[in-house]
Length: 82
Image 1 (cartoon, rainbow, N blue to C red):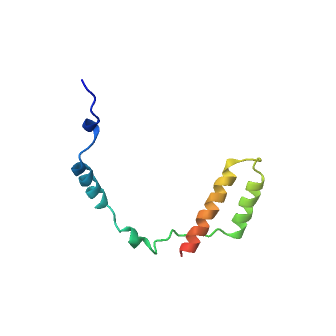
Image 2: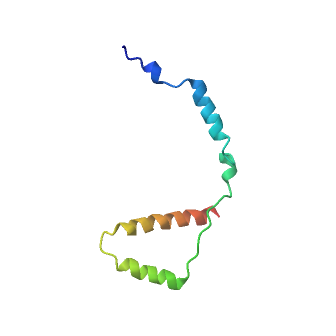
Image 3: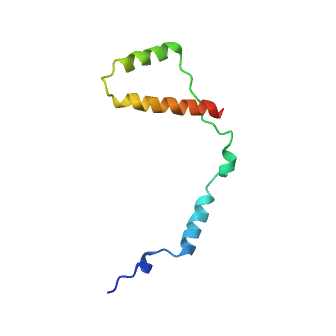
C-alpha cells in the first residue's frame, strides 16, 4: 500500500461547512465588542490591608505573587476599558 497524504486532508467544503456552523454561534461580531467591559470588583480598604499582610507573610519566590501581579494588570485593563 502506497502512502498518499491527500487521503488525510479534509475537503475544503467540509471545512467551510464547519466554519459556517461555528460562526453562526457568535452572538456579536468582533466589531460589536466595544463597550463590553468586564466589571471590576472594588474591595474595602480593610480587606486590601489584610491581603497585603497575607502576601507579605508568603515565602520568598511564592508563585501566587506573580499571579496576583498579573491579576492587577487585568484589573487595570478592565478599568481602562470603562
